[in-house]
Length: 217
Ligand code: AP5
Ligand code: ZN
Image (cartoon, rainbow, N blue to C red):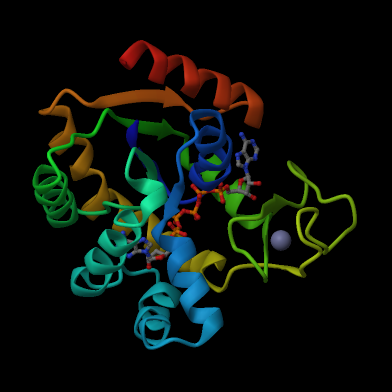
């Protein structure tokens, strides 16, 4: 399956993507994680992305689209993928359509996670991620690691993302509403959007998502 996951910052996209990708045997491709890995490795791409991310803005399309396409061209993504955080504006969605068409494949679904803004703020305020791998995500009350400050998966140090400060989160939410939400309408015209509530326990949301995707096949 080829799925796009969409939802506001802190909706739980990364958390759900990890389970859904495993259940569906497809790779989880997160542009946010790819940028963070580049930043921690000190690459040129990471240097270009960092200032935009810290300010809560989108990284320019020239950088993002190439990076996403390179990742999708890897052998593990030939038969499907779960995109998390890409596309994030209409021009990225159009670029993705062109790339898929060139490969003669199509998206199966766009899974839209709906969460009220006050819940998103709580989820982001308590989020802690792993220094070694930013896809290892915890929460100080909702999803505590066994040992405080230590990643359960790999033993890495847990920390709060630089862009999770109150001001930057406000900016990211604004960017989501103005630039990312329009892709939901874009995909609605293609009949691809499945909206679910992302409230409730993590496993309840995963079950809801699996059910919605099954119905969509
Ligand atoms: P990115 O990393 O994609 O951030 P985001 O979209 O803002 O999403 P988040 O990672 O904040 O949240 P999430 O929905 O994954 O939630 P999570 O699962 O962690 O992007 C960061 C930046 O990179 C962007 O601002 C931009 O600058 C740049 N970027 C990335 N892609 C780009 C693109 N395509 N174009 C341009 N720029 C791009 O969950 C949040 C917390 O809630 C966690 O602590 C978790 O434990 C907890 N939680 C999750 N589910 C539940 C639940 N059901 N109940 C209780 N707690 C829960
Ligand atoms: Zn880890």
